[in-house]
Amino acid sequence: KRVSDIIDDFDFKIPLMSLPHLFNTTESTIPATSPYLSADPIRVQDWRERLGQTGFKVGICWKGGSAYKRDHLRSFSLAHFERIANMDHVRLISLHKGDGEADLEKISDQFSVESLDADVDQGGAFVDTAAVMQNLDLVITSDTSIAHLAGALGVKTWIVLPYLPDWRWQAGGEDSIWYPTARLFRQTERGNWASVFRTMEDQLRKLLISRNAAGVGALGRADEG
Image (tube, rainbow, N blue to C red; front, side, top):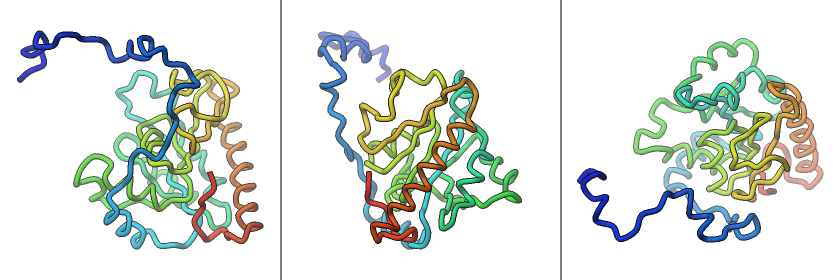
């Protein structure tokens, strides 16, 4: 049946976004627990073998769908990852599909980003992407579905936000009320992505140093939040 055919079969109907008001939801009552999704364990093992165990593996996504009217605000140039790509032992792995994939060819002479196979997610939306994420040490992404999937999987995630972000990320702070394993990196000046990436570069260096000091090693898998 079409929705229009069954709409009158309900006793009550309410817009989805009105539910938080009726439930008296506050920031403190949002159950920010993750993971609440998990990937197919067979696919996780398959991608573990395909990706290998070497290096500090960082999944990246730099652009959302261009049909979204605010995409020009949330998306950024792949070139901003160059300094991160050149850090010792760091491997950048593209989680990006759709608009912007051609950017990988544009930067191929400057730095390396590994692409996944063409058959990724052929078995269903995000089925392989989720399995890949569970084999990564970190995900760095713009405000796209990749950010929400990584957060729901409980993967360590750095989300790069524009000066005026979507309401879900609130107006300030580094923590996400939805995803405990996510960290928010915000523009402090409209349109200035360079400063955001400099902050992330510094934080990533500290993370790698702390792993080495703890005996984890830059070539192992990260478990810290």
